[in-house]
Length: 174
Figure 1 (cartoon, one colour):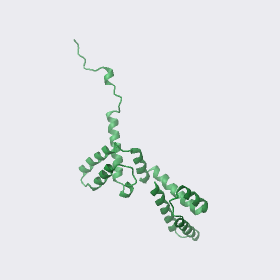
Figure 2 (cartoon, rainbow, N blue to C red):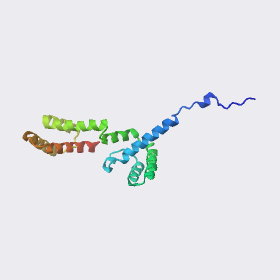
Figure 3 (cartoon, helix red, strand yellow):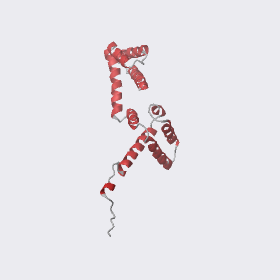
Figure 4 (spheres, helix red, strand yellow):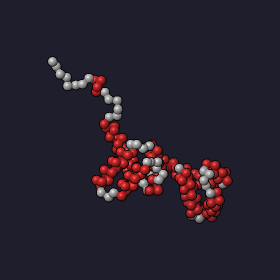
């Protein structure tokens, strides 16, 4: 009688992800969790996540010892398995100054500011149609002040205030 140490070929086939792939996914979630721990509390309020994950991130910020922080990051990675990671990634990218999403968002805000200064009422009408949350009177005052500065050749302090106001309203909506 001959014994075989090998199982049938059908039993060896496994359709799920490999152990290495699972480890890569786990490390990616931990990395995203680490990026969340580096965000400010104000930025974290804009991230769509569960209360459990939010509490874990705040707890991680309180920790001081390296090993405890490492273990807690693993816990955050575990919690992130049940989250909408794509939505979280999009928000994190919007706040990450090196990301493409942040650059695109920043350029969109700059274009609105430039259009308001150069095109006037037409751009204002379009902006208000897209973002009705603006205080029209305050917005017009900021545009007038920035245009006066621009024509007088002064430093663009009012243009910066206009940009900040546009950014504040647009980001509050998102």
